[in-house]
Amino acid sequence: MTAKAFPTTYDEFYTSGKLKKRWDWGSSPRMYFEYAENGTVTMSREFTPAESDIADARIAADDYAAARAALVQQLSDGIADIQAAITSANNDAGTAQGLQAGALSIKNDATTQRVQIATFVPAASYQQAQLAAVKQQIDALAARDETFAQAFNELFVWRQNVDLFMVKSYNATLWLAQVISGRMDN
Image 1 (cartoon, rainbow, N blue to C red):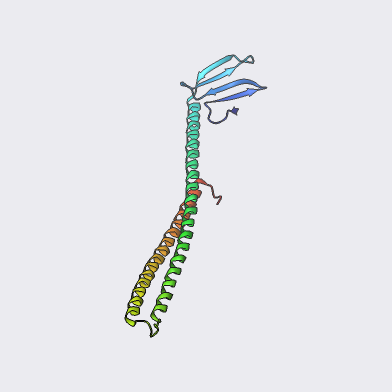
Image 2: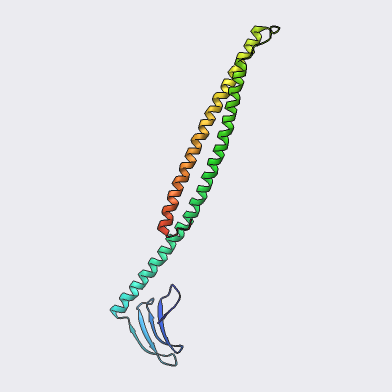
């Protein structure tokens, strides 16, 4: 017996290149045919209960295979989406790390400026009250910059942790999808 390419609704049996038997399990009613050498039908009948059971099983198997193939394709598409999300989250974590380093640098600069301001001693020729007021204003601005920079630093640390957690979540989801689909290629 030689079966046609999936999906089929019949099976055929050939001898010396000539069609001898055909089981048409896609028709209603399901029919069995035998053929003469010249290709004419010599006998036809409805399927027996056993042949009908075999046809039902084949249809169920074909339906299952098609549904499984569709699911595997959906999982493969989902795997690609998860891999893109992992890349994006890794990139976001790297960006956050760079921004955190910049915020920390600004904070350190502000701290250095505050130390310089605190240790500044004006010359006797300057009016002390005016210089003290300027020093106080500059110190207040530097303190504010230091506070903002520290807040940004903490924000970017938090963002990195969120992004890295997402990478772990995506990796777990990716692993699960690959196990389900039987595609453990990454």
